[in-house]
Length: 603
Image: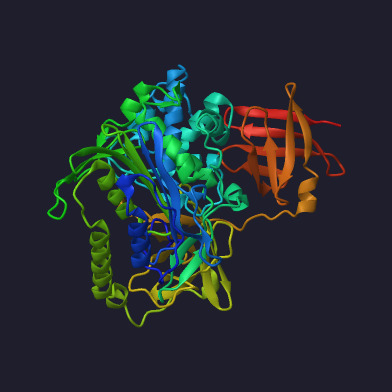
């Protein structure tokens, strides 16, 4: 699916009553339960969890509303929510810890540590450092549709970076990019010999007593005290939506946590990297992380809130002036969950808020901060509600651009079957089109689920992307444009998947895939000897041939010819099996740009 609910913003849900609440005991937060109940009602939001800390103690952790709207199960201080991009500070902190250990430098070219990381721009390729990656000044825009919903592995996503177009020069400006934080996770893995997940557990979660936190959708699904994600349909009906599995890009956003655990994380940042008197990460790194590394753009005071201004980004944290106080903050959002993690280093307070639908987190955070800092009351909830109503009105009043721009009386140049096939962009993966029930469907980054995306003819060889679960036709839908060669054959399809660059993303049509059934693949499996090392060829998920080389990631083998397979993530690398008279493997040969390497099958 190309149009998705990636950070879709503010949603309106149906009214929720009887919301469960846990009252704070600190006098400064008197009335919090009443305020949050009102916000949840105004926004018709299912639930929210909150942590408030000061210096080295917890002021409040608790939940309001429901983690399971259908069963009316309450949110607690231990309820797990996806915290999205608030994960980034954890990843960057581990990079800071590795620098303290002398294993890397933030200011040396990152490809010293991770030569597999490559960029299209030569200057970026040669000079980019971990610091550049940590503060989003690589020159690359988001390119989120490359990873969002993809089933590609972490290493496959890393391979895609070199094909992605920059939108500005290296270090020219701040541009948020999730791939750069995923790549930091791979650096951690390579330098430690352990997964990003294992490093996170050992270096941060265990020392901080964050016993409920996990890092994957499967782990979240197994948890008893977890929140579901929600959205609202066009009839204002609350709908539970599936979790979004983003484990491959995990270092950028896959942590699931709760108020009680995140309180410990905030206390550690307020106390310069120490928790219960013990150093968890260096104070020198903490100070760099919350100091300006790059301007984010804009930041001038507005008329509505003139005491909110400037915006800079440090190392996985943003900084701004909040009503005369220095605020460090990061937000997170993924399919229903909206998070804000913030602290005020000069005032030694921190606030964590996450909801299971958008719209409420920021107003609740600001209300709490104002209370803790003794600031005059400001009706943040009313401001955000008014902004939401204004945005909805503007959307309703906007012209139907698809209707206006459509060229009437045209038809496709080919019969519908000719538009089917597999199309590839090296930076974005595989897009598939097929026909079913006389309809042209598209399958792209559906997260392994059955696609709901179909193509409606617009004009000529341009199609509008539609969804089978849409309530009505949108005023503007993403477009797919099919291209032909001089022989009249369809050779590619393109779509404007990255708004920060001028060009469409072009997917080139692939030749029909070679399909080998499981029984045929089985004959290639076994152990092979190469210079004293044992290589293992095996089948993954019942249909994918893999090769394991000691000390390297497992490689997927893609059929390319008779007994010939290409390495999926390494262009120009292949494996050729040599067979005996009975078509059983005798050996395999790695065919590489630097030579051929033969491994003999073990008897």
